[in-house]
Image 1 (cartoon, rainbow, N blue to C red):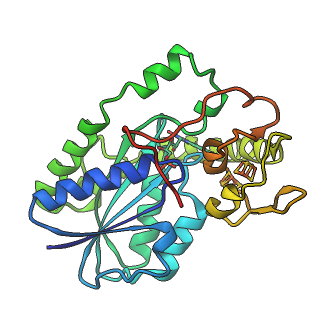
Image 2: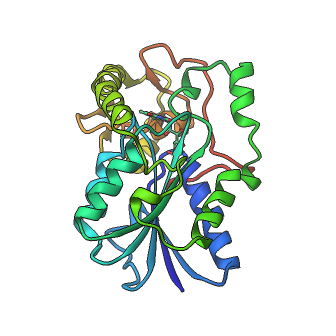
Amino acid sequence: MQTAILYFSATGNTHWVARQLQKQRETAGETVTCIPFEQLAKQPVPPDARLFIGFPVYGFAVPGIFQTRILETIALKGRHVYLFATVGLVPGDALARFADKLRQAGAVVIGGRAVRMPGSDGMGFMKPDSPTLRKMLERDFENLPELEQIQHDLQQPQLPPDRFPKDSPLRISAPKRLLYRLCRPLMARLETFAIHRLHADDTCTRCGLCARICPAGNITVTQQETVFGNRCILCMRCLHHCPAQAIQIASWTRNKYRYPGPGDSPFRPE
Ligand SMILES: Cc1cc2nc3c(=O)[nH]c(=O)nc-3n(C[C@H](O)[C@H](O)[C@H](O)COP(=O)(O)O)c2cc1C
Ligand code: SF4
Ligand code: SF4
């Protein structure tokens, strides 16, 4: 079977899960192509491949730039799609709403799971010696239980959406959907509040890395200054990856932790 894993990852969690999933599917005898967001416009998706689509949840939602890229550039009609999201805590109805959009585009959504990983939002505000942070990083990344759930889901006969397992993030009750809908504007306001305070402090060396890796093309670095535009999606990639730790949200992230990604070798978004 041909499988393609299409994913967006800002700080490495979703990239890690995509690679674990790739290993799992190859062990199951499938031929797997892994395509990150940055390559989506350039690398062809095998036409008959079953798709796994993965993303980090931001404020109970799919990162807008990724959702748009998938819906506008991938031929979805008749495709079997399995969704996976990485989350710090809870996905809300992010997977369920994305599944609705994929179905509207003609895809057959065969399942979905959320994988718990360190929260890329909270970690940048934590002291490096924080016990909460240590706990977050303690996960056994090589043996994520959610990967077993995915394996199990794929071995089941294909179910209609209303018969997905009760714990499926694709099956959200109407009251919960309403609750998430009410929470989303509040979370979006918090994000905007943080985005307006994102800046490079005076330790910036103008190395240009942040401009090269920003997935939204939101940063311009000149010899004199490092400027943030108005396209930021608050993915936190620049903040966690700046080699000088010069990127801050107000002063709240100064001398706080920077996340290199899960596993032993740091995530390299370039
Ligand atoms: C702006 C922002 C908003 C987030 N919102 C949520 C959320 O609503 N629920 C949640 O569980 N995690 C949330 N997170 C945490 C990320 O979804 C999680 O850490 C994810 O694994 C990051 O994936 P990546 O490393 O592939 O970018 C948020 C992170 C950011 C940066
Ligand atoms: S990555 Fe950091 S040091 Fe390099 S230009 Fe950006 S803010 Fe400055
Ligand atoms: S400027 Fe915004 S979108 Fe770009 S890397 Fe930084 S947080 Fe992400």
